[in-house]
Amino acid sequence: MALFNVRVYGILLDSNHRVLVTDEFIRGNYFTKFPGGGLEFGEGTRDCLKREFKEEANIEVTVGNHIYTTDFFQISAFNNIDQIISIYYFVSTNEPIHLYTKLKPFDFEPHQIADPKGSSEVFRWIEWNEFSEESVSLPIDKVVVKMLKENSF
Image (cartoon, rainbow, N blue to C red; front, side, top):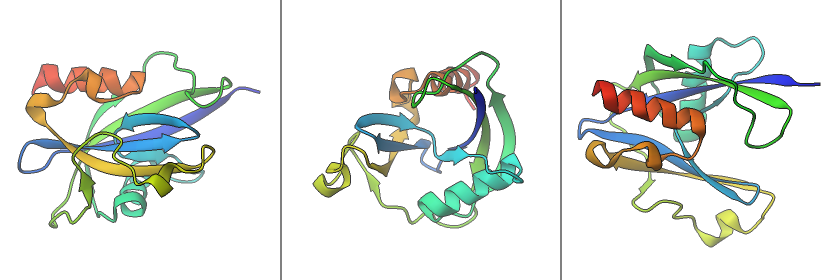
């Protein structure tokens, strides 16, 4: 049976005009995407995004304007039965961001990627001038990057 998988992502820009991304190792594959994750039953999209930022990055965010919701068919990168619906918002924080970040893509410690069936993530800032569709891995994220760059938010 086909299912809908709703994902919610946040675009966090810092005061230095950098965009926060997460480099992830999932079941032997590498992805760069925006922070966020899956909507849980009974949860609103904004609450989901707040929870995901707190769980993954220990950052309290304020969810701002809606940017985009998927308007085309996208099958899951992880199975061939889920249709992905992704929702993107701007997020901000009023507190200093104390997040350990990497400088290079996929800069994992060896133990983080030792299990080919496991998963791990590291965060990284990308300078706005260097940020492009090639900066992210997933098709829907690429659409959002293009929108962001064209509108120069």
